[in-house]
Every structure is written in structure tokens, then in C-alpha cells.
Image 1 (tube, rainbow, N blue to C red):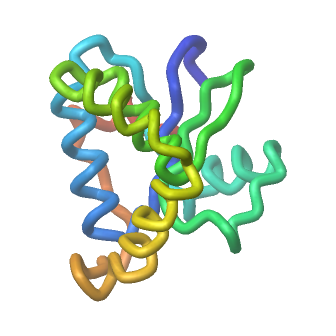
Image 2 (cartoon, rainbow, N blue to C red):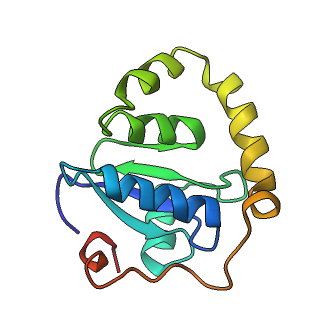
Length: 135
């Protein structure tokens, strides 16, 4: 694993999550992030190493190796802090207590398959993007 790269773990069969990852990849001009699906072997290993209860986590996890990990809306806002044009809104939304933010986050997570659909298998990165995904 590359040092100094933040790792985004996402639901690989969720259309909303895949769209979010594609958005981050497109706007990650400083090459800050690496990606893995929660369903992948490496995703499961990273979750297990941090004792994250996947029955309570229903989508995005951001891991800063050697520092911390973030879940739910905290993960989304931390990711936004590294994307130009979204830094300010991430900082402003971070002023709202996470318990309130997570009510909305959990609602979207609960209905994401209904609203946005689901794939039969995890996203397979294109050859150009393969180096950004952990295996």
C-alpha cells in the first residue's frame, strides 16, 4: 500500500457509491486517495484491522493510515476537504453535530439501492484507473 494515501472504502455494488467514487477520482487533482470496495478482500482486511462493525456502517469509510478512520458523514466531509470547490462547504457542514448529519446520511444509505439502483458485481476499474484501486 502506498504511504500517505487516504483510502476510501465504498459499497462496490451501489450505484450512488460508485458515482461518488467516480466524482472523487475526477476531482482528486492532488492524487490524495486510493479506493477499495467494502466487499473486496483488502476492504474486509482494512475493516477488520480497525474493528469496524460493518453491521453499523452502511457505506463510505475513509482511512488515513497511521492517523484515524472516519465513517458516515464524517468520512464524506473529510473527503470533501480535499476536493477543490468543496472545502468550504465541508467545513461549514462539519459545524453541524455528526449525530444530526448522520440522520440524513443514514436515511440516504438505507434507501440508496431503491433510489439509485444496485449492480450485480463490484465496479471494475478501467486500465487507466486500476492503479488507484487497492487489490
